[in-house]
Length: 138
Image (cartoon, rainbow, N blue to C red; front, side, top):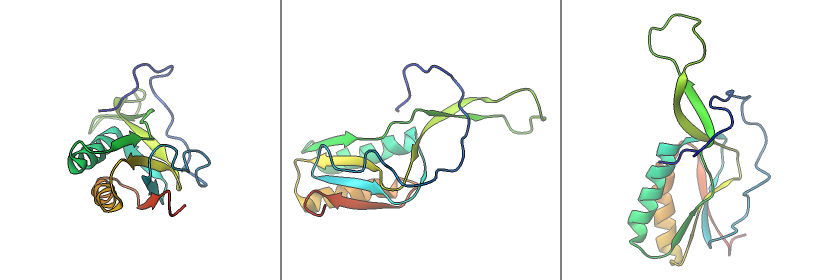
């Protein structure tokens, strides 16, 4: 799974709810087909890996895949039935904060129908609503 190799600060703040649409990663820069987020949310490293496996399994070693998002925000969890106080919990997992309009995955080297099927399989694994985009449609 994807996790940062090294971080300056181990524990991060949750932050405010994600506002506005993406200003970066909004165009297809590598492939001809992509999966664009239509909602804001947190995508965990497990969900990214699950989507990646769905795409690569469907492509069967044809084409190329780019993952445009990276989970670099830590999420901490305190154990169940722990009393108040005692500090912030241990780092449990990492997430990638997603804004609407972010391109999450890109595919190249396959035909339109195969790319559409692969990206649709990946979309089922993600917690945000998505749309499949292509260079010809942009």
